[in-house]
Image (cartoon, rainbow, N blue to C red):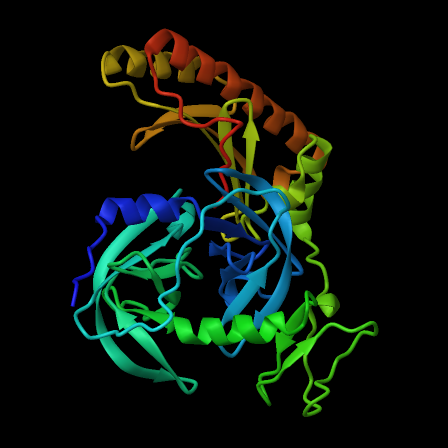
Amino acid sequence: MSESVQIPLNQIIDHYKEIVIQIATPYSTGTGFYLKKHNIIITNEHVVRDNKTVVIANASLQKQIVDVVYVDPKRDLAFLAVPKNIEMPAVAINENPNLKQGNSVIAVGHPFGLKYTATQGIISNLLDQHQDINYIQHDAALNPGNSGGPLIDSDGKIIGVNTFIIKDGNSIGFSLPVQFLQETISAFEEGNGASGVRCTSCDNLVFEGQEKQSFCPHCGSEIVMISNIEAYEPAGINKTIEEMLEELGFDIHISRRGPYNWEIMQGSAKINISYYAKTGLIIGDAHLCSLPKDDIERLYTYLLQRNYDLESLTLSVKGKDIVISLLIYDQYLNVETGKELMMHLFEQADHFDDILINKFGAEKQYSHKISDGS
C-alpha cells in the first residue's frame, strides 16, 4: 500500500491564502473561505448574525458587499454569495477523515483584523459534545477573528470549520467536523439557489418564498428569515461619525469594522477610526509606511520636529508602523467640525507618507490594489 506524500506546511498555507476571506459587519469581524466546487463562501453564523449583507475582502479580492444566503444557528454555519467573475483556486475537503488524537492540524484566518495568519497544533479530543455535535478539540491557536476559517489536515484538506474557543483556555479551540458542513451544503443546494435558514426546533431547512414568513412551515416555531432582518442603524456619536465620513465621500457600508470601528483608505494610507464610549475619545490612526532598515535616527528626528509644528495631530511609531493620529472628544464632535479635522488628518497622512517613503526610505505598506479588510 503506497504512503501519502505529505505536503510542505508552507505550500498549504500559501495555497489557502488565496481562498481565505476577511468578513466584516457593523457588529464584528471574522473569517470565511471559498469552496469553488459549490461556489459559496463558508463562515460561522455568529460572524454574520443579524445581517443581510457583509463586507468581504482578501489579498486578491477588492472590498465589496455580498449577500448572506444561508444561516444555521444550531451548527453555527453561514453561507455567503460569491461575487461574479472572481478567480480563486479550489481546495479539497477530506470527505472521509480518519481523525485521531495527536493528528497535526492547521488553522488559518484573520484574528484581530490581521492580514492572514496560520497556526499549527494537534487534535486533542474528538468526543467533546456540544448541542449533540462532537466537535474537534485542538490546540492550534484561535483568536477573535479566526471564527469561520478552515481547519486543515497535514494533506492540505479541510476537516472542519473553526467555531469557538474556551476563554482563558490556553489555546483550546473547537471546530465543527466537516461532515456537518457537507450535509448542510447538500441540504442547502436542494433549494435551487434560494436563500434559507435552519429551524432550530425541528432542524429542517426553510427556504425563502414569495411571501415573507415568520414561522417554520414544518413545526410552527418562530424563525427569522434573512429577508426579515432589519438593517443596521447607527445612533448617537456613531451616527455622527458615519454622516461625517459619508459627506467626505466614503462608502460607510464598506468602511464599517464593528459598531465602534471604521477603516478607510486615503491615498496610500490606511486610516482606522475608533470610538471609545467609556472615555468619550474618538481616535483616528492613519497607518503610513514602515520603518526603513537604515538611517532610522534621522527619521526619528524628523518626526519629533514635525510634532512640534503639527496642530491637533501626532506622529508616532507603533511597532514598525509610522502612524499619524487625531484625538477628538465626543462632546466637541459634530459633522462639520469632524469633517474639517478628519480632512486635515487625511491630507497630512498622504503628505507625510510620500515624504517618508521618498526622502527617508520608509517601506510602503498599503496600496489601492490590495484590499485591507479586517
